[in-house]
Length: 573
Image (cartoon, rainbow, N blue to C red; front, side, top):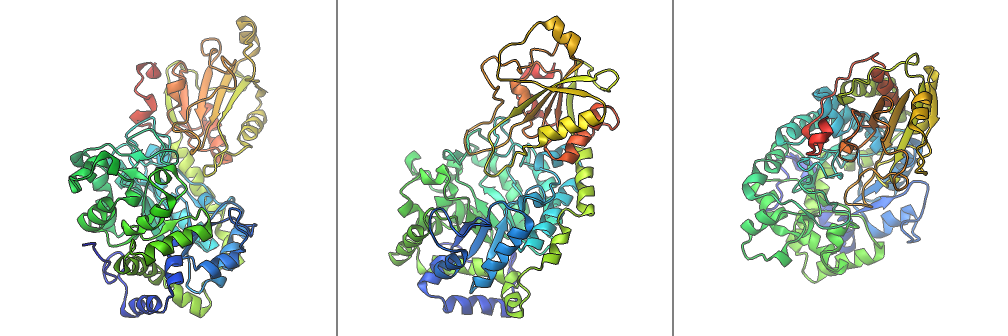
């Protein structure tokens, strides 16, 4: 029998009046309202259309009775306006979510980046993770966000994994617990629902659940001693929401249900043994479970959408993240409810968990009092001086000199004036923004300090005469601004053409430094580089501090984990 929620206990701790609102609201719902409450819609500020369905934002809220909202992009004024519009139109207040894993930049384009999980770990200082959570909460709340789909509590066991390369807070359970506890302590200084992900755990393999079924291959004992410890820690601490990934855990699933065959193994989002039996019963999680995005192949490749939309709720997930087609998915969910795939007990339990979080935030009271909507004055916190100081502190503590075996540092305009700059980019990702002006920042800052910068054309194989190169170039600076996920299972350096002249053939000709602005494991593709820096982000503050540290004006304080060597002995040379 599935374990039902107890709204009087952690993480809800609701009083009698709050529970009464939950129960009375459910009792007064139509079937259409019940089904709608299970969905989170993705909105696009500045647009009244969603994925080709010509419904206005107001119509989506009023006609389909959605329970939650997330949104993409735009600046703080537009985002706040959208969220006020949605809450104004909604009969039942919405859970409004953002993906703030490293600061307010996850909530709005003009938000303040503080530090990723990788940067927090490299800093060795829990205050960096705390500040990332603190700024995430403050800036998101000012917009009208009340739920944060972060932090990632995944463990980066496999260096090839690029999904959580920068989002994971460590390579072992102890590090992840240490820094995610600090992040959540900072986050909860604001009134915001915390959500950890990706259950039952990413980071053990290299593939991307956006593109294929994710698989956590650990044995029962291995999982219990790693991801199990992480999730038990956060459940004990009162985490309110857990996002289920489209990730299977075959060894544990077969232990829980010995009758399962390989073809029966489903991602956690469709696996009752992982949601109902392991998470909600064995680990005693009394909060709400939400699916990861339902357009991801880890879910869509499991069965027909008509089937998995209601089966996700039947399996124990309480909310469904994102429509494909809003009318069709609503019909699929309604059919599943009417034909008994979603039982009445399961529907009521899911609704109690959803509305319980809204009651915990007293959204219904704020709606009645007229205090639910946000005022433009609250946006003053975004990018404020306090937050920028935290960003600077995180950059100083996190930027990491992985190696300098050739003693190429420090540099100066007097000794390294003529710089050849090699700039490597990846795809412009949907969720991980690559700033186009990072190159511009580097060039402007270097020239301001007295360097002469020539940007290399990597679209040619021509290297020219090495003696002329040595005569004309004092310093080679290779910048990797490769970011993204969802288009490849593993992100690596891609040179602009075959045998491009940007490939570091020049490491013995002139002093050479490689700086990565995102992924931490590029030494795998550039083992010949003798001086390597992980900077973790491409904002102006980080770029200024990278150059300060290259010049010896500030010491490198970050510490790399073992994954940076990519299991290659030559990477350490």
